[in-house]
Image (cartoon, rainbow, N blue to C red; front, side, top):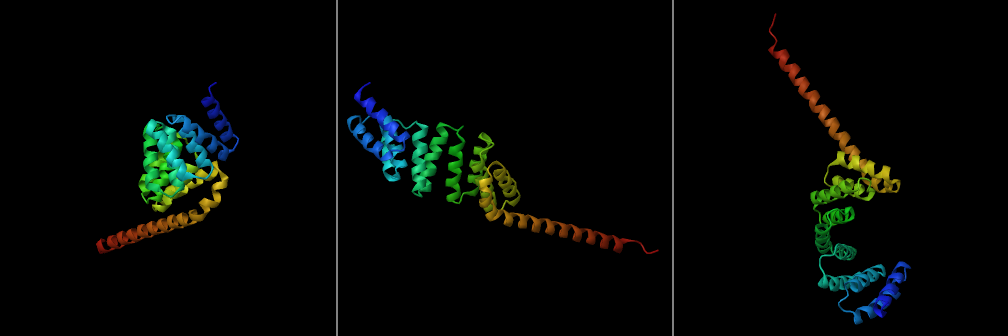
Length: 217
């Protein structure tokens, strides 16, 4: 094994052991000697991100993308770093690129939905969460996010249905769903009562009209 490969292997082992600061040092040395290493910059970005340095991670991912911009994991992880920095527009762009490269990954659709939600594009968020759930029906987080997006859009019936499904799959989500599901249920009850009132009013009007039109004997 060459010294370069040994250095890269060491860095990956450090990442796996949770020694991300050590991995960052190892990988900085590695990319200095191997500036064209896609794997080196990708792992450097990952180690920096795990070490709580998303700004530096993005720079490393950009170096990796300058070598090959057709790698799903790089776009996906760069999106995660940008999301962590609250740059939702750029994170969305990265997730969209990632989704084009691997449209069968449910997590990228869930994360893309989170970006759309943060950018107040509710229907696009719902569409993304729906894609995530279609790919992974038991994806509780995506189901919860979909339910929450429906709630924000005022689609209370769907919010309740998907909220219940999310809690069945992951009971730990119940406190989050409980924050808004009562509002949805009250809205649905009010809507039902209004519809019943309107139906009674129509029936009364029909009866009154029939009485007026009844011939006098």
